[in-house]
Image (tube, rainbow over all chains, first blue to last red; front, top):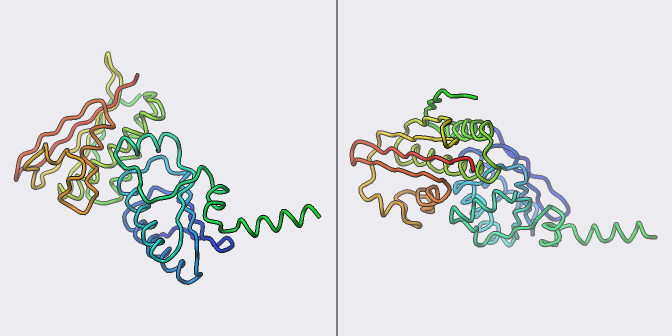
Length: 129
Length: 133
């Protein structure tokens, strides 16, 4: 069965959704992510949806579910890279995604959850020397 | 320019994806703006899922309209249980399934034309269209 790769970056997890999601894939992602959050004691989850041309209520519900489950497991979820036309459509659809944090891009998203920002800062400092 | 009507079955989650792809191809071809395309495809996705989940499956007719107004029209048909109270079903927050209840009312807001015909015990037909500006 297909699955969506989950990458570990510092203390955060990164998921890039690039395919047209169908039900089984969405359910599998929720399960895999929940397992990895516990396994890696993750404090932050970054979901990159910049490749998604649409977000309907099915995908919206999946994002909200992931954010809720993560929160209960003490991890922050940030959805990054939403396209402007997708944002306009979601609002008109009536899905403001309450409870889901968003950021314009992955860099800002990581800063928001504090995942690798400390490590990145240390590397920057080292470069300066 | 495709002028024939495409009829696609909706009997699985993969079919919902195929309906989206076909609607996108038509919308792009006729030159709908990116926002208009996105709204139409999203509405089609919601309605295709309704056809699958509530209508127990059905099909979608996708056509390009080339007249005074140019656009894309999609008709969703099922022979499911029908909707007893359409006004209620169009209200945000109403759901008879496990959804959040944004599907029908939300889809209506995303398109220019929206029509729904439903007979209890016989099925539901929803027609949507988005026109080029």
